[in-house]
Image 1 (cartoon, rainbow, N blue to C red):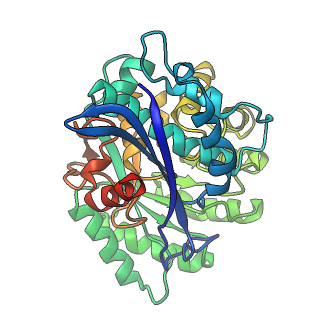
Image 2 (image 1 turned 180 degrees about the horizontal axis):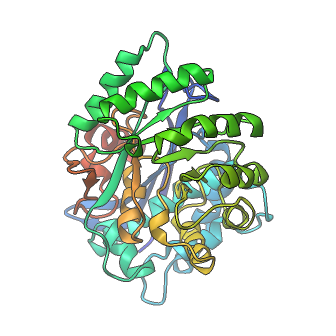
Length: 388
């Protein structure tokens, strides 16, 4: 196999909603198409990639550094001993001449291409990505379906508690059993009122509700909210402070006995290792949310999983951020605890295949070769436009 052309673009995934820290009015996303010389049914195999929501497009890094290294590399340097495309070897090529550290937007750019490479490798093998990942990185026996929770509950102009309840009812009607909402963008009293409104929809069961602060709180506020949230027995209390403030998280874990979740804004093996070393994370109850699409891709995520095992963590305590088809395949293949879902948000990149059905809070990655983005009609049309 040879990559004969690469194509890169930017698409908007903007919205009027906001969380405690940012709004999404100017959010955009990088997309990539890797066209190969392998032809199936008269069409070349193409690998597609994109970056997850929450970080902006990384086009300059892609155009100036990452993609030229890939296209300049000898074709056989990207192939394993069996002559198959190796995303791991390609990852080493993309990271050549990059200094350690500086994991911000560079990790996003590499993650976009890593996704496209894995999509292409699985398509060349004629299998869905989760089966390819399980055979190459896992135990060969992937999960057939994945737990998913519905993330929403954003702040929006004019949004009432009734609107929030209706949104959550819509998630339940769609087959989800656990939901998530944003907090920290209002004062404590208002947020508690919003939380209680959602718990009412959940038949009074707070363990079916997760809340997300998006890194807004200082230590005093984190502890004050923690004391107020304790009686609800929530599914988790997420990203309470700055993602690199391991001391804040460690102190919170000493005072808040219910599950804490964090990690979506950690983009490397080194940062994830520091999280489990220094942030007081408890492997019996807490959750790690590293997003493969933002953190150098699946090659790095597999390394993170190896590190977590060495520190006594089960893969079942990992639920990636992002709510997209790529991480759904990874969750099934590596037997993670689940995957995020954003019903109706961050289109066209977010969400699963158009024919995906959530039942009992679980969904299957599907059997289309590769990631299966061809099953997302609107997004596939955009991706095809890159190279058609």
